[in-house]
Image 1 (cartoon, rainbow, N blue to C red):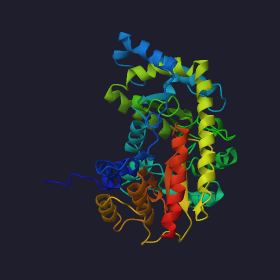
Image 2 (image 1 turned 120 degrees about the horizontal axis):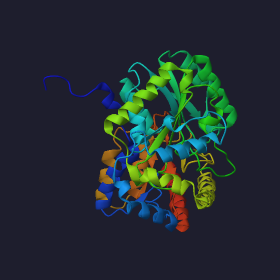
Image 3 (image 1 turned 135 degrees about the horizontal axis):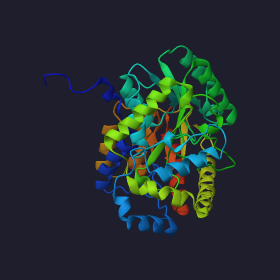
Length: 432
């Protein structure tokens, strides 16, 4: 071509959560039955949407108004509903004008990073969620900038690491939180959130909090919204319905902008995001209109609390089962629906394997493991030998070696079978 087409940042786009599906699909054609533990889609894992929620959506679909454009910022009544819900918690107060809808949080994330100055960096947690880390790295034309979450300390942030990286990277303009966290299932304690807010004040930063799992907590945990702790620091919370309802196929999310009056530059960024959505016209109308009807129904939190109890049981079962392998670092989870399992240093080797009976499958796995990180090697052998599809944790911008699983399987017997098999396969792999 006459000029280079691809930006340097495009090389940083990766999403192993979906990439592993390509390999699983290849093995499926060879007769391997796949157990999908790679992606957080409750519907794929046998979740049933309550009939009363379906009725609300069906009634909306019968109304002509849901087939038209919404306001560019989002349905006004829905934004007013969400502003009231936020303000009832205390903390940072907002109006409907501080809320902006997107076609899912992936849209919100990519748009936010697109309109940051190319020299500005957002530091986020590691292990990182790929949508954030890839979008930030692509915008900066550089590797993601991360602070460590510590598996030896309940996956809490290493505050010294975060402070050092903020202090010695003057291009950092924001700290990203994912709370509850994907991929670790950690929920930020309030004292840590207060420390991060203080750090943002000290270095004149904004805060970004991905709160897509805000109402998915269990085992006694409580998730604090950014608006509750942010004080007068400028910040953006990212929210949506894909996990909580669950309705991932709706692709409906929104951001809430706090303390716009505290920084003219931050206010200009929020205005630019508004303008970007106006150029697109608007986000999808029907799911926006469903939000007040579903979240405002007293049955919703009864439904959500019952699901959270189930997830808490699964979390405990998985942690207890895999804790029987002494070579692993296991943390019980408290939010979202994932667990990240880490192999202790030095236990993974280049010659370890699992027995694979199908020769075609075995050959493919042996081809795939050439030159890959050691946790990829384990994940590919697990996939070939058992059909269980998990995600290597080194693909989450992490130096750690391990894998992420979901806590979503509704079939209790299948869940027990799957994670007992994972435990036994790990032991066999390490002993090989």
